[in-house]
Length: 95
Length: 329
Image (cartoon, rainbow over all chains, first blue to last red; front, side, top):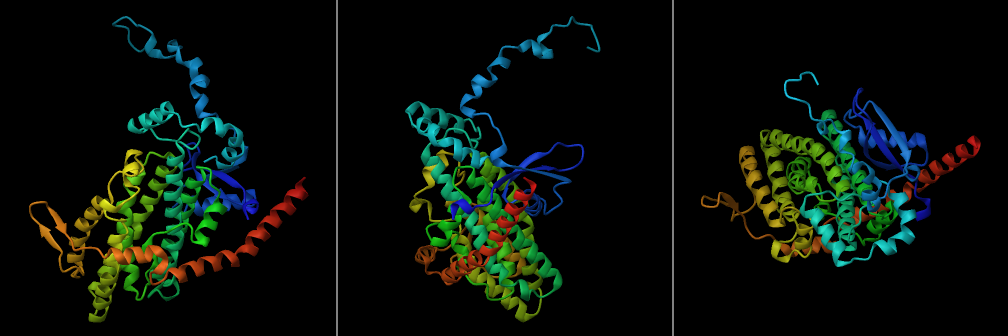
């Protein structure tokens, strides 16, 4: 039974134009078109979206949370990338 | 919810990672205590994973089985308006089941496994759905009481420590409010209708009141999963606390409808500010859980038949997808 399960798709919804697509959940479907149909029926029954993306879950490449400190470490000591790092003399405006 | 990826790459790595050293357990609990959300691929103790799989899949099964008592009235709703509303509600229950199965799958259990566990009777679902819907007012009572009790249970779950479950619950809670209000409206119309309609509304309340109180689960002193679930912030309030909240908000609503809550011991306690209610028939609760409620067998038979009758559809869709994939290649 198990090996007959329809593949899993991740569903991303754009709630209205101007916003980016956001992960909503997942659906099983035998192919891409039915994944879109299932995503519509499952996640937009109340006009929650103007656009849907679906992507096979096994095609997503994700970082490993256990490695996240090493992965993001290079950004940690670069505080000069933030505007608050810089001292601006009092009286200077529009900066 | 990247389940399949997790399944495949986890096999070898998992053994090394799953060692539950005191340091790991402590760090995990510290994240929980700091109100951090746990996400699908994060390290978690096996017992936390198992508890969530049990709870989320039971919750999903309840939504799926929960379509049956109301589905019973789809073809007999008293007007086209009521029929359209009920159809939308039953579709929502299916949707809720799917959100929850999706959330459970992030923990590494397959959809087929969960469905198989439901159909074999290994997995449980909420006892409430083993009661019959005998008259149209039952549809009102289910929306008002059963969905009302579900909302009480579910709102704290929106803050559950497991991210995918919490997010699914936010979506569900938004939709449940419609379910409860349409139920109350049915009750209101019937309670203000003819003598016969009012009697039907009272009859429905009489039959659904106690099973609704049982939905909160065993009394705190008998609840075997509670303490650990509270520590893990899967649960935020005890069964009895939630049950009390439900009684406190629902009794005034029954008064408003002019209906009588079927509990001779019910009274408002001025000093505590709460309603005191009579003893729940726990024998009935345990009988229904054990499979001996009025409709347990019927519910399972219907579910198994639906699974079997749908087999050719699932197979045809797979065959169609395979054919088109081959053509495209």
